[in-house]
Image (cartoon, rainbow, N blue to C red; front, side):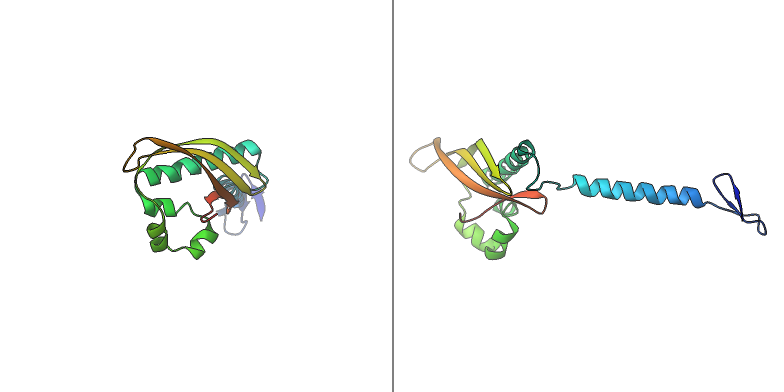
Length: 153
């Protein structure tokens, strides 16, 4: 074989086997795959405090958005994997309050390793009074690259 341009030329067949471009394609594909894995759900207990606060706050807001909309199916998906192992969707629907919530405001997020404590102010309507605001603390955990709500704290 004789090297010629970007490939190898076989002396007896005179065909070019594109070795170098194939290597480049494989290398680029591997880089894209590794970069994708690093950016998808990359939250860990070693992430910066700012990254944890931002990710947890975003997930808290999304979960409460589902509760405010009365979408318990979606709210259930924010439970930690361990919480979902011990609590079925049907049980969650029976125990979770799925109506009356109007607004939630994340006051603080404090993380220690993979465990996070979130302090919220929740606005809800009661049958006798409207617009009640109450403080609420929730526990969240970082696992599998995401922040998850811990049920039954």
